[in-house]
Amino acid sequence: MRAGEAPSGGGSLGTDLRRFLEGVRVGERRAHGGLTVFWLHGPGGAAPFVIRTLDEARARGELHVTERDQATVSSLVIENRGSVHVLLLAGEILQGGKQNRIVLEDVLVPPRSGPLTLPVYCVEQGRWAGDGKAFAPREILAAPQLRAKMLERSEQREVWAEVDRYAKRAAAPSATGSYLAIHDKAEVQAHQKDVEAAIGPKIVPGAQGAAVFVADRFVGIDLFQDGSLFAREWPKLLRASTIETYDSVRRGIGAGWLVEFRLSRSRGLALVAESQVVHAAIL
Image 1 (cartoon, rainbow, N blue to C red):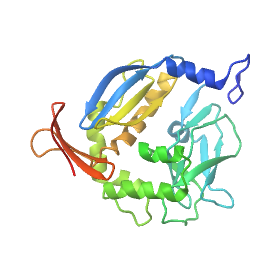
Image 2: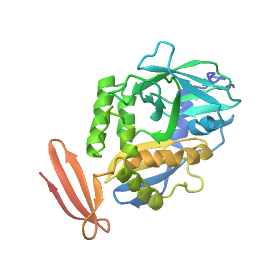
Image 3: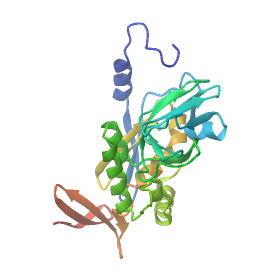
Image 4: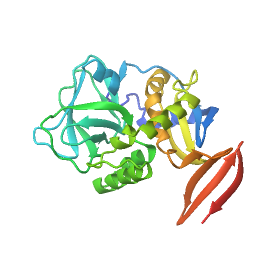
């Protein structure tokens, strides 16, 4: 079966997915501050064809992303000029063109694809300018809650509102309202490096995905049948998750961690030390 074809022999995509998900099991745990990662293992197997990540393909000069001839906010043009498939994950940030964009959904671009239309959202509300048509990836994936907004097929204004929420929480204003301003902030980068050093940029052997929690709040799951593909995408996935803990989970002045949270219309703050909630206030 070639990529893009429906399974033959009476099989179904739903059956394939259910079989894979039913085989997933939870492995060991890693935690740092308010971020907890559970490694996930499942039915293994390399992909039936070679897959490069967006960043790998761009580094080789094989993937080209540009504005359309008649530029529009919600779509770009993508072309794979290489000899293998290229995977774009939903939430990949593309910088350039008339405004920065974010990939709407997972896309597996076939070899020598020719020009294809790529659905996107805008993550830079205050700019629609520039002579350059080309885009470059920043090896940045959107934070999980922003990715969730895209899965809901939200209106563009809702995506902008989510970008603004993250920017305000990170105190990372931008003249053009760019999501990238958050990742460009020195304090955010230091926070990411701190978490990466503790959790680790490499996956445990045999892992095919991860479940991420922030202060016992479920953040998201990413799964890959090909563990080697997961290993190559993991550093970017981890950096995206650290945005959820920036300024909401911080070291206390003394021992322990302070965790900010919301319950309906109330705000909460908890002091957690050695896995014990020393005190929680909900006001």
